[in-house]
Length: 194
Image (cartoon, one colour):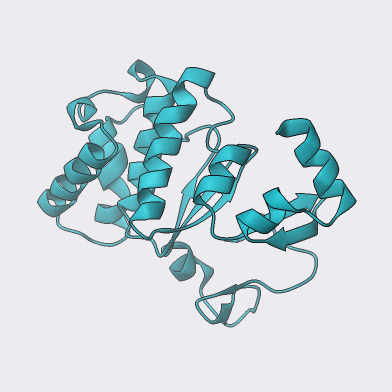
């Protein structure tokens, strides 16, 4: 959705703009899209606070003190304010992923894009991250989440798209997809994982 990969066909519309068109600045659009990756992608040589403030200061030209204040508020929101001076290597996987979420939020995105945000975590840490994401959903944050966490998708999503081999097999509300899937591939998948 933010063109880390270039689609071979179709269109992607974001806020009324076809992002595949050549007549716009993709970097400006990317500033409206927060990314949370599987592997956290935190800067290891920077503290948690520095990880959260670097982009707002350098890209959005936010005042350093305002960026720090905002970062601390976001760290409190994800339950990690006390870790602001820590470095990523001293944090658990769940803590690093929550820092990554706070870092994405520091840019005030219109949408958060999650790529399997819990796949690299120990099972005990998954709940921490999903709890933060559920809280964001309840506050109205638009999120696009690629996940195998079917319970989370059923509970939090407003729309579910089931894909197989890069093709949309079925889409609908959580009640439709989980309660009465129509596509045999969707049915087979859900029978195996639920």
